[in-house]
Image 1 (cartoon, helix red, strand yellow):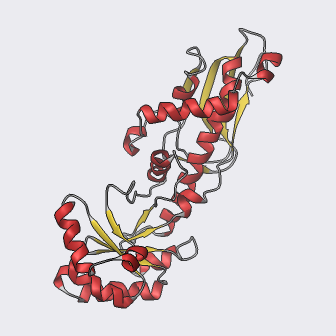
Image 2 (tube, helix red, strand yellow; image 1 turned 45 degrees about the vertical axis):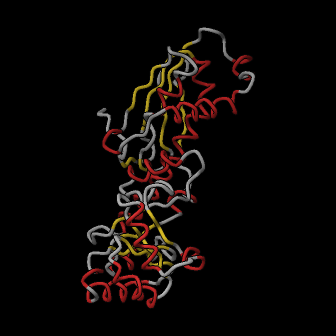
Image 3 (cartoon, rainbow, N blue to C red; image 1 turned 30 degrees about the horizontal axis):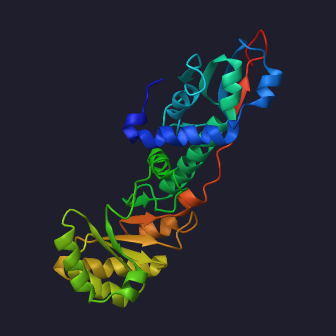
Length: 298
């Protein structure tokens, strides 16, 4: 099976090794008592991670990183590609080697894959609904703490795109910044350009009046907060017919965007929708690890 993880930018680093170590430590603690009782040392096993329902694959590169922490003798063979849409019953990976370490790592491995596959699967549902419109489906910073790079990777596996990764890679002046600002919006944008020239500037607006104030500033993005599709369409019209400085500004709809409404927002002409539920409310993908019975294959 071709490894497509590089296509989606699978994240690596010391932080990931630390996350895997901490995840195993919280489950294994002082030792896997059940496996110590039930599994004879040296017993070999073979099993397959299997999809219990349709979904989108994300996170398989984690498996060898996880199991090698338990035993170098565990062999992991991916049988599906990252970002692949698979049907219920599909085998996603083969895991073989000493039975003890495989059983010890089973739950932690499935937890990671169920989380990331769930995010990828939900993202793909949104992407399908805006197909052909040119509207991008973006995530948000509403991620599980410690999982942000993995969550955003899973969004990419599902066909979505990433909004900012943190407070450091884009300036986003939100409603609370409007309320707390000590200077006119134009002055804040000018300060952002001067102090952080490499960063895109985005301004969140709650009303069409705020949109009119923001468009002449020529920021890269305007976030339409809690607009309905009709008002979003009016914002697109005003952007396209407005001042030259604002015509290149891209419009992002956020809030009130769900599977029932996302197509209407896309058809209204916004450039992107951002959807917090991709990462804060994605249902886990139902997966299992099925072992071969002694002397045969399931």
